[in-house]
Image (cartoon, rainbow, N blue to C red; front, side, top):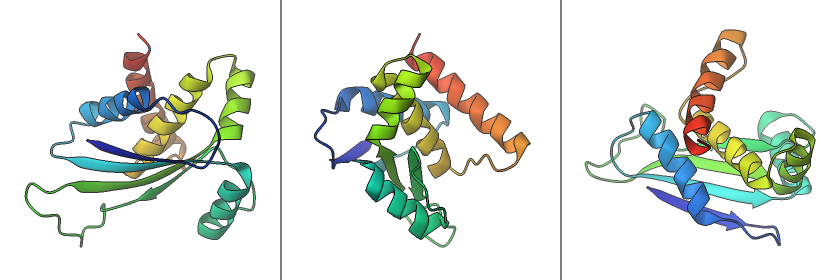
Length: 147
C-alpha cells in the first residue's frame, strides 16, 4: 500500500497513523494486491472550490473523494498497482469538528480518511440503507483502530 500525501496547510501530519488507517480499511475490505491512495490536506477555500466544481455544491465540506481506477473499462496490469483515487480533507473543518465532538484532531482526521476511503471503494450514503451499510463498515474499522 502506498499513501501519497500532499499538505497545503502549515500543520504537521502524522503519516504512520494515516497509513495504519488505510491498511485497516484495505484489510477489512479484503483488498488484494498493491494499492495507491492520494491524500490532500487543504484549507476551506480550495475544498469549497472543489465541492462547487465537481459536485455543484457551493459550500465548505470536510472531505471529498475522487475515485481512481474503479472504472470497469480500466485495465490494470497483473501485479501492478491499483490507484484507488484521491481524498481531500479540509484541515480547518477537521479541527472544528474535533472540538465539537470532544475528541482529538488525529481521531477526526482518521474518521474523515476512513470515510473517504469507503467512498473510493464504491460505498455511498445517499439512501438511508446505503448510509447504514457504509456507517457500519466505517465503525468496524474505527473500533479496530481505537481499541
